[in-house]
Length: 351
Ligand SMILES: Nc1nc2c(ncn2[C@@H]2O[C@H](COP(=O)(O)OP(=O)(O)O)[C@@H](O)[C@H]2O)c(=O)[nH]1
Ligand SMILES: [Mg+2]
Image (cartoon, rainbow, N blue to C red; front, side):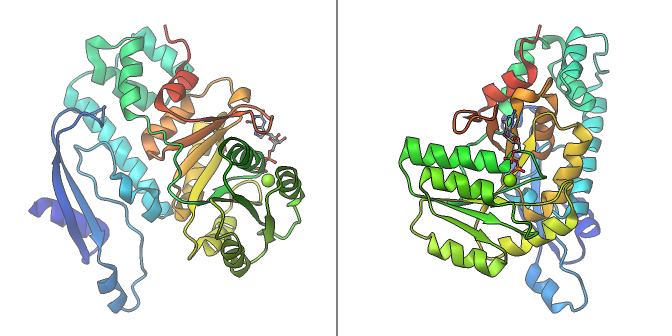
């Protein structure tokens, strides 16, 4: 414990405290089966406030080397860009350590390895999975292991949901699909809002969808207007907030979005095309991380040749996937996510 505390103070500063420790024995982490000790640490924000001149820094959870998964409740919400980067490299380090620990050389000659790599899954993850399964590695055992670790959850934690992402990824179309499903299938009351952050008037598309669905629509250009729209829509069961940004993802855009999000309890959903390259996904994730992303929607599955990057993303970031969209038709082309469909989409027929 002394050693861990020292590590925490080094990484998170002198005000860091241990919030909880517990032994984790379960297999739900999938990639790890032996017992691990999980330590959750946080910075005491009150103490930090009385230390003038010190910037308030968001901190990642400190994970023990034996631990593969960060605590879900301290997930992206509190990570800043650098924290996200360090967490990823920490995960990478852990995986390398794990590989060494197991004493198993990555099964380079295993045909499964080639098949998984061809599907766009990250090499380090493929090696981790195969070395974990060892002799038992087979298409079924790989899928079985993944089904325990893939995070998918179409249930949104909040009634107000904001969809962010770079331009053209399908945010507006996805919102129209979600709104139509809510109105037509569930018969619930929906309100639509569009944040026209750059005041470029790109809100007509949303306005038209709202009109077709017969739901109220508001276009807002300041955080204050968003708060007013939310109050105006307080009787709605679901408020979907669309955003208009610039492509590619910029810190300036995310900074503005952060101002809009402040004080409005919203689930933050990042939309990203399935066919996005691994390195690109990482970059986009870093840019949007300051918002605290609660869910992913992967779009345009119908246009993707391979989808392994979705799996890599899910295993590394642990942000639950809510939906997959697979076409331009509104409202048909959207599917609530579950681990089986994600695995089947990403791996297909694995021989
Ligand atoms: N093939 C395909 N096209 C999609 C999908 N979702 C959206 N699109 C198309 O992608 C384009 C951009 O979508 P839009 O919703 O305007 O993106 P936004 O800029 O993020 O709001 C439009 O032509 C949509 O019809 C999808 O799941 N599959
Ligand atoms: Mg749009």
